Every structure is written in C-alpha cells, then in structure tokens.
Image 1 (tube, rainbow, N blue to C red):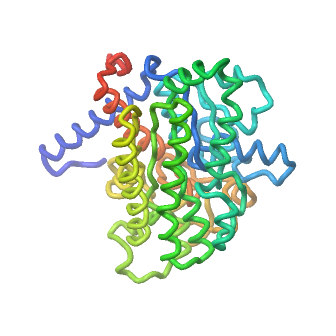
Image 2: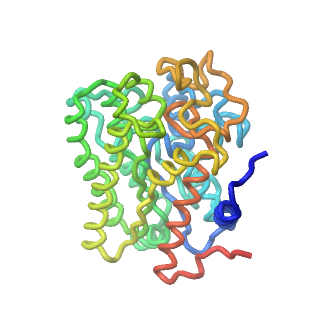
Length: 388
C-alpha cells in the first residue's frame, strides 16, 4: 500500500483528487442550452467510423480499426475508432448532452434527420493539405485522399439538406459548435515516416496552419460562430516515433524518455496555430474561438503517470516487439495483434500512434473545462453545468 511522506503531501494529493472528481462530475452533467449541433472535422484522433465506412463502400481492405481489440473497453466491439473505447469528441459530445456523432461518409445516403444534432467528417489518415500537393512534395497519403478541404466541401454539400433557407442555415450554424480537428498531424507524420528532410517538414507548418484558418473562414462565411480548434499532441512521446528514431543520441531525450526535438516541433505547430487564431479573433471579433490544448494535458500524464493511474507511459497496449512494444508493420486489430494488454486504462498509448480511452478522457476533461471557462467569459451562465 502506498504511503505519503508528510501531511502536506497528503493534502496535495487530496486537493488533486478533489479537483479531478469535480471535472469528471462536470463531464457527466449534460449541457443542452449552449449548442444545438456539433460538426466535427479531422483525422483518426476524431474519426468515429468514416474510414471504415469508406472502405466498405469502395470494397477496399478494411482498416485495422474494424477489428477487435479496438473498441473493447467501452463499445465492446470495433466501431472504426482507433482506440479501445471513446475518443475526445465522444466525451465532449456526452458532456454537452449529445449522442455520439455519426460518421458522414458512412451515412450520407441516409436521411438528413440523422444529422439533426451533428455529424462527423473526420477520416483516419486525413491531412490538412490536399493529397496532390503533398504528393508533389514526395509525401504520399497511404490510406485516403480526403483532406480538410474535401471534408469542408462535404459539409457544404450536406448543409442544404439540414436547413430550408439561407437564414435557417445561418441560424443552425450560429448555434452549432464546430470542432476543427485535430488536423495537420498526418501531414507531418507521413513526411516523418517517409524520411524527408526535417527542415522541409518544418516548412509545411505555415501551410498547414493557413489551411486550418482558411477552412474556419469558409465556415464563418456560411454563418458559423463558435469553433473549438485543437493543437497537436506531444509526438516526441509517441511510441511509433520513439521506435523509428530509436538510437538517437541521449541528449535528444528528455528525462521522461520523450524525444525533445519532436516535441519542440509540436510546440512550434501549436504556437503558430495560436498566433494565427489570435489574429483571426482580432479581425473577426464577432466569432468565438476556443483553442483546445492537447499538448500540455497529455504531457502532464507523462510527467506524473501514477497520479493519473498509469503504469505504462511509453509502451504500447496493443502492440508487439521492441522496447516500446511497437511494430510499424503490424497494426492493432490485424493478426497477430488481435489481443491487447490486460488493462488498457493503465496505459497512455493504445497502438503506438493513438491513445487509450483513459488518456482521451483526461485530455477531454481539460478541453471541456477550457470551453466552459470561455462560455463563462461570454456570460452564458445558462450553459454551465450544475455542480449538484
């Protein structure tokens, strides 16, 4: 049994537990007065089944997310999510009182009524920049050519079926939350795995950020008002990159075992994105933009894993081989990776690229708290969940 060194240390632990319990309670209290719909864009961090549906429609090989153990912890079946359970967007939908967002590309032939409270356009492996531009840079997209612009165009195609007039559409978007990502990570991931020169990869960042901003502007022109815009995760702690760059010089790692230069790259993307979002706020004071910090809440888990219930930080739950239990040639779900660790909630990483439900839930807690704080700043007290 764990013991504490002092009464002050015990007090700190109790404060932390009380704080976490308050946030978890908040996440379980639906908020129905803020938004009428959620529209989501992004990649595999947010994909609730689009790539799986596309693969079925096109009679392609099913992605690994179509098979167990993906989905084992919550859904108890594979749903197309690259996780053992729920994603950040799932937790946010639950917290705001919505059902899980249906995937657009698997449901687009259905009735528009199924999208009354929102829809998800995110596709695993999607990029911010279009595939032809990236191919010209020697960065092929191995799974899909659905970029952020394609997703926004799909939303434009759908919109007329959700509202009867231009004014109705503007009202729908005025009361909707737009989750713009996470997107852009694959532009860098594909390039890093291809072995491109790192300076060339850094040059992609302003382009990626520009397409995120221009996509927001397109939706603003349609009537959208409130945006949740995530940054990138600390990719220097990703078992996939730790495996790829294994053998790097010792001074390239931080004391938690993460690659410093890759985390600095994520910070560069995040800072540039925040700078451009701030400029957009200045130009458009009539819109609401909440930056969703994925980086710092995740780093806290690596810094203090035991505090948050994690036993394994850099090893993969659903993986095989090597010091990080990750093999790039075998994806979780495909044989022989049809099983995973006994307790995914004790692992930060699910498959070496994506996180476990336990990780996503803690990040979602922080993002939801930021969203509520922003709503408080707008004096929208009717949106704040009851703490009873």
